[in-house]
Image (cartoon, rainbow, N blue to C red):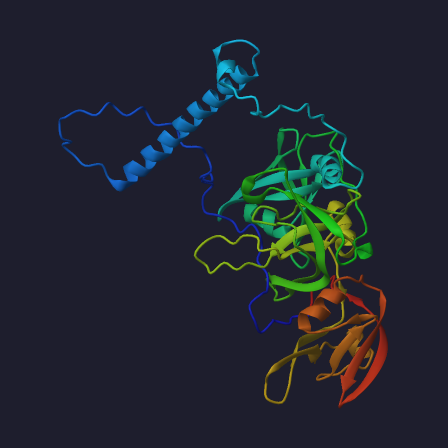
Length: 420
């Protein structure tokens, strides 16, 4: 379907490439040297305000360190049965006690248990090419280094770029692309000369429920092996993040989550509380006004694993991915005044010999349902059809001239890369 949404995409890919790989400014600044004792001689040059700020930070660090040491010494002194410090203690005064805190096993079904299970199967990807450099995440599929990620993570490498994989144990390896699929924003790469890796356990995204707890794992802003948690906020949320070179939209029926997802999380794992990967973290909705890089506001989106697993298997086998095809172009429905409404997807054109044409669908028909899925707009129809495979039979409900009807059809394949 070559539909182009009338409004900007509702989401943002959470790791747009940068033109450089400058480190984030989170390093602790060095401590400043002690200031000389004041003298009666007037200063010959006034320090700038910036210098004063830097000196203040350094001084604060020094004072904090001294206070920490002094505090520990005082605590030890008051805890001692002997020595002069005990004479200053009052009978009703107590001090903090140091508890013996055991490292307990993670409770079953906890975020801690999920993290320990999934972390070895998630990697950081550093990608560089002629257009710049960036970083993202990936999910290990096989012990010999097949890794699932987003197409928009690896596309920066182009034909002659470089991909470096950083594993959870601190080792690194170079990688090459096995296959990409812009329509579902997925890719599979192969790490070189590795073995004994821990493949992720793949779950079933179709079994998710709204409100269910989930865990996101990836490398936000390059901080690898980062774990966040939240819930499933919504299911089958149509997310459009652009289009390929032929105008086909990159749209998928996303899992919406409030688990923090930030730039660099793309390609990482969204896991259920059994430690199974049920989604690929891929995009976010951001409140950024363009003055800085977008970050999480609790609206993250993951590609459901069930809808793309057959495509992932095709890429892993070196095959060209194929998708189900209805054979129409669509747009959001508008009323007589031109105002947009969200009730169905209106057919703009029906391809010759397509499944839609053979089933009797016509230009102007409004598709309102595919099987049991309600269609709310053009993106909704595209995302829904992407969950099927070529050859699947579906029942389409549509409206024509104010009347509702249904038709059953067998979906085509886009193997020839014509309009879908």
